[in-house]
Length: 449
Length: 173
Image 1 (cartoon, rainbow over the protein chains, first blue to last red):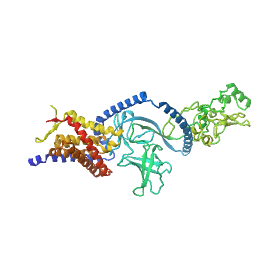
Image 2: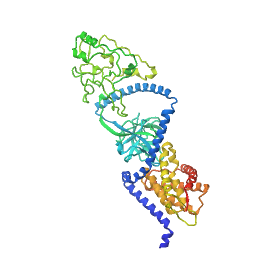
Image 3: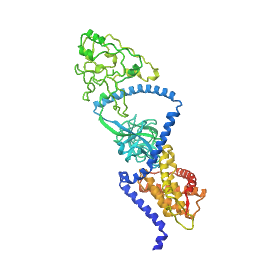
Image 4: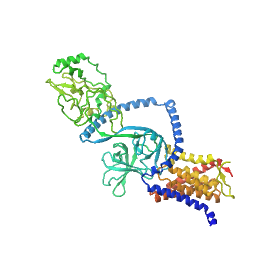
């Protein structure tokens, strides 16, 4: 017996070690779903052994890169700066156009009592490592529990979604990429609004599943998150369709090119706080393309208060308080002056003009001196410039009609010219930028709200 | 007196110091986890922990130390991923045992033998991994011969270079 054991000792040990590992595997598979949590203690050893070196190397690498790029290699920076400034101008105009659409959408959502998820706080994190295996597409970020990161939080970049937090350690977190075959994201096609499930494949591709084969999907179409997974807020960019083919079981096989470059991730944002609330019409951005163009024009000097009083007094139909609250009505709105009408209602009773917006929605208190739109963007949470509210929004903001009747100027006014006193022609707004810098300013200005 | 793994009395066996025994596999894991951030294809074609496993197993020429080395390195590699722990462990245990058993019988000191051994064990490793992942864990896997051979060749080339570097750390018993 001893001779047999001695002769096959190596083989017996091999079988024993393999058996133990198979047993461990079987236990983990049986606990599917939460096995990451069950093996957390074991995994943290490897993570703690490797990530400090990765963190240090990333720090050195970034420091060296920053030193070189910020202090030495500045070739072409001026030209790039000019180009970026031009781009900012164009994007500001584009932003205004989109903000108009968003405002309209919010008003409609308010009418329908829709609730929407807003990104209220994100944490920026550095990517410091990966699993090192193409069969486990995960990355490690340098923020963990200490930074408020929890399991199942969405991870994204400015370009699009990246994945979700899978495991959290005190100072490190593991992120499962959307290209991993065990990941799943609710997604929809932007144009056709067809919904599907985004999955990774074993070779690292991303496919959209569960779209019926009789649907029309064309390459190039944008894919967004649908919000159905309760992890990613609706509307985040996912990628674009690259190839459409027939799949199994009457479903299409739609290949997606992720919007975020998953192979070259350096910094990511972890969505640590979402807020679900009902959209309000007051979230609308109160700035128009004409306002932006007007900022570049030489401004008309402010009229003295006496002039305004004189105008009011001359009209003889409003009291002094009205005149004080409405010092002037400008022909050209100053920076950030609000001229856009709010809400969908077309009329407001005199004396009830203190509330604007949709009936039933949280009514803002007016007059306001400034409004911060920070955090009102449903997706990116971008901060918009603070803008003073035009005097017409004030309780006593009334417009003189030719008949001398006071009419609140709160709702249903297409543009600023309607707030001008009679006899004062609106100043034409001349764009100071080339036409190509303004994609659709005339349409914006004339767009009915 | 460093702790060593030795086996066999008729063949030349080597030992390694503790820093090398711990540091080299750890460095391999670190590089394997870090480099794909800059070169994503690295993780697809290169398996540094496997090369280290084969090297230590062949140098020590002890099946038991070979399989234990493979098991430890494989399990550590599993811990860095999100798949169940043990898939890489089983695959590298088999490779460690096989490489050390082969090292007892063959001269694996020259570059040609090392190249072929590494190529062969890469395919063995891939086959065991595929079997375990597909059969035991029910992971969706696709087997690709061209990719396997290409990755095997890449690992074999890198292995030959790496082994010559690691030879510097060998200590005769």
